[in-house]
Length: 251
Image (tube, rainbow, N blue to C red; front, side, top):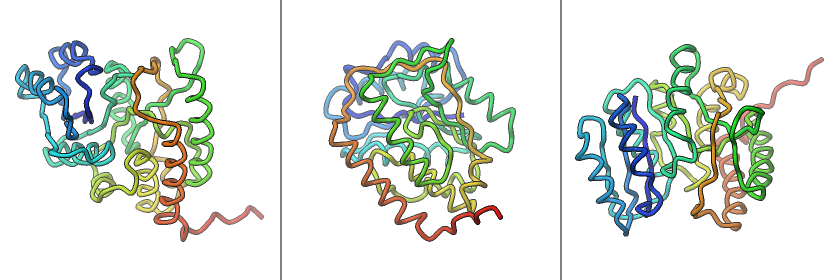
């Protein structure tokens, strides 16, 4: 089991003690991708690697290539190393590391599931704290994505996802993505194409309502990024899904 953590100029935000404690106490492997940081992120990650070289790998990019490519590079590295499960996690730990075991338990129990996504659903008994503006923009985005993909998914953009190692998952990450940020949507589009229909994909994807998710200050997303994200969804649809037959209407 390996978790990829993309990092870009995270020296002031990376919750180092939480990663340090988790590395000491768990058997999970980590692949940190330093995506061309120009602050002290690289040195911080190397310090963590030195603490546990058996379970921590650091990949350094000479230039900033974006989150999508950082995640793709890290996942391919993990799959090439022969892990049974590989996922990615946001470096700010808006989703706590304790959720890794919860998501992994579903994959281990249900062999038909190829991927599990953390989902930020505000339910009683759960702590999901999100800025109101981002929440409503996110709901609009998720509604559009669900319609475009013809997949009843609630939350595509939560940065907590784990995949079962399989030939299809490897294919999903084989090529660079169109989008630097909403590559999660492109992953789903690729999976739908590989399985032949949204209905087939829906049977092998699981959304897990997270027990804890807290919006961390310092996000680099700007209002204009939402407009770019919608345009990217259209590009993804045009490349992967526009020729896919629509389901027949019931008689």
